[in-house]
Length: 270
Image 1 (cartoon, rainbow, N blue to C red):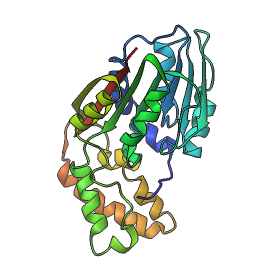
Image 2: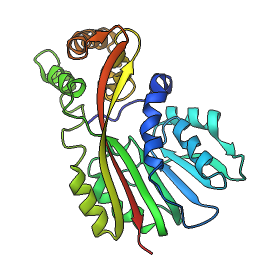
Image 3: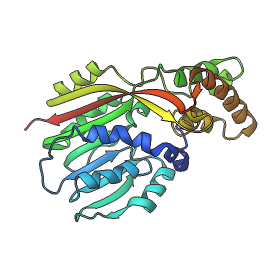
């Protein structure tokens, strides 16, 4: 899988739809063990949803971690600084593949990131070990690798025109585990887990909105791999666009894109 280059402006074009699952995740997080909590947001992106943590826990010291310089630059400019309740919001570089907390946390949260981290469940033990008793580890990931927007992308990339350029670029089909596997892993690590799936029916406006959506996320490895060849990039996008138009037909009110996500909230035992 290619490490993608990220475009904060493209990602934020659908910020409202992308933020909703994070709000739904936080709604299931219980009270944290300390009055001035320490919180980590692993894979914070441009920081817009990280900032919402300060609304729920205004006294907290919150650090958003990401490995994209472009995303971190945007987060620093738009969101870093003291919060209204006396807490603080800051951002730092970290790679979720190797990040090990250097201090105790009350909450470690990750939003739409772990699907990019091969073997991410093997990292849970280190992260949960860093939680205070009664602390929470919570994450949500897209759980739709079999949806047309991904399947069509994979099929196209594997076709005769593109396979030499794009072999091994995209995420594997096992990048997200089954809900029961996460529940079992978290329970065996001494947590009380709550794991569920939700399918959102996003109604997207404009022309080719599914393509516009995936340009900010799942298509980033392809765009990165073809960045030095604009003609090839545009040709791939045109082929993919035509396939998406058939798979996600438009209606007078917009284009409906079903999008399934997987959620987990795990509270560490006292």
